Image 1 (tube, one colour):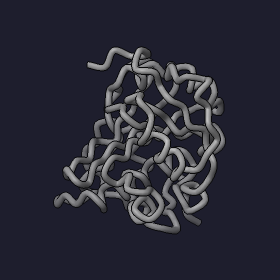
Image 2: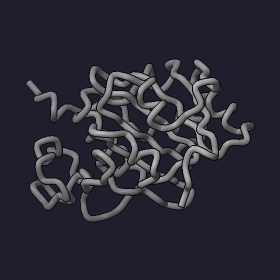
Image 3: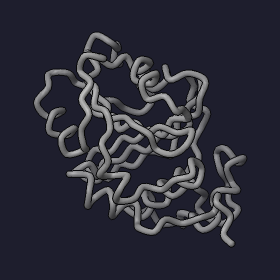
Length: 203
């Protein structure tokens, strides 16, 4: 029997992003936050509570495309103990992310058009602790080696391939959080919030 921390998803995580992400492969910024309280997280992100909108992803992207604010989030349950935040208009190390408190926050940020895929960052209590990107080779070096038990079968290899690497990084997050993305995950209803431009001084 496969250990839950070494499971594999039923479908390729990159392919699901392309099929259901409405173009987000060119601007995907996902945060997996160790919390069961999406509303608390929206407050910590300084989202506007009056802008709350229950909607699917396609509607969230459409609304974001016509609002004046630079930043917004689509936020909802991921798995027991975890909430997913899809961020619009933020960036790695953004002060909003650093404000999420004493809880683990895993981050995947990619833009296929630019060939950009950031390391799988881990934040906690206002700091970036390092990254949990799988090693290139089995048993190879990791920035945070305590996450090595989650990596068997997810080694990145020596040659970079954004689509494959993002799939493997998403598998890593799925093992840690207890759920991979799937069709239901992508098509569910979550809560969209605007983040006022005055909430954060963006560097």
